[in-house]
Image 1 (cartoon, one colour):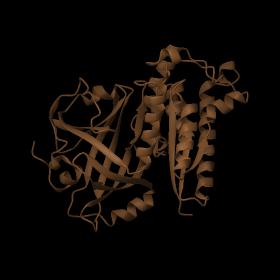
Image 2 (cartoon, helix red, strand yellow):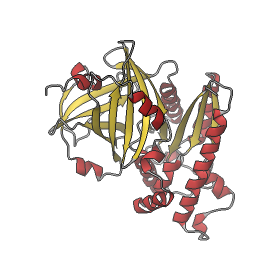
Image 3 (cartoon, helix red, strand yellow):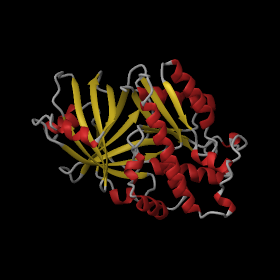
Image 4 (cartoon, helix red, strand yellow):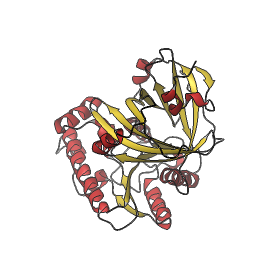
Amino acid sequence: MSNEIKIVVLTGGPCGGKTTAISRIEQELNDCGYKVIIVSETATEIFTNGLRPWEGYIDFVKFQSIMLDFQMVREGLYEQAAGEMNHEKVIIICDRGVMDNKAYISEDEFKHVLESKGLKEISLRERYDAVFHLQTAAEGAESFYTLENNTARKETPEEARKLDHKIIAAWTGHQHLRIIDNSTDFECKINRLVAEFFRFLGEPVPLKIERKFLIRMPQLIEMLKSEKCEMVTIMQTYLISDDHEIEKRIRQRGKNGGYTYFYTTKKSISSLVRIKTEKRISDKEYLSLLMTADVSLHQIVKDRYCFVYNNLYYELDVYPFWKDVAILEIELTEQNQEFEIPPFIEVIRDVTEEPSFKNYAIAKKIPTI
């Protein structure tokens, strides 16, 4: 089969709107010719079938371990079935993903669960193509917070807010995490989510809008103390392209022996907007594509610090050839979208429209500060 399968996660805090969102997204994508497969929420299925850890019959950490196994098996079977479908465009939407489990136990407990299974956190997080987080109504839309539509949930508003933050922290570091907050009414919130889905899928075209800043090197160790900051190492290699307007690259992304691989093509439309297509590839495909590397360009290695500030996702790139400066990148969904520079970041200047600070240019020559 040659169909293209995208696997995404729709997650969020309690009473974030997932039930409504899934129904709306399924209808919208069906209208655009997608075959939509929904992997229902594992925890809710288990709870409603009578296995409830809070009743004291099973250790909670052991329960999370069992649920992780069950969830991975379910997702794997759905992906296997999707691969056999005679349909050009297939998308699997997981109602919560495996990293959601991290929000319910301690860091050490989650680490122990993964070690017992020989799993890497980075590999679990990056097994999905995109993650969309719906903020709990308990954060900014308190009057609408209710658990009546899900009897398996018992959180108070304060507990819901804490859980919402923990879920965001669990997914922080994913290369396509989008947070849909409560800055608008619920209908607009769902509309914004649908728009993010369409942008991710490239319907009608995949647009990437970036703002890029040259900054003073921040206190990286202090940043990593935040639960909403994650560091990954990226190795980026540019490939030979027959079309000088199209940039081709492969990327290894991860840390501590757990890596995922991606093949990307980009075509510039303006200084702020580029058409981008990207897909996950296997380690074997990655090694094969390495043979077509453009040897006239340097391979780029950088540590990327991904963090969330005021519900916007930031990426801070630290290069080995600069000791005192770094690059801060913000991905926007509208050219005039407002954003805020975090207070712990000191901006030297906006380099969005300086070609020398684009990765492709850096691969040719390190820019002068």
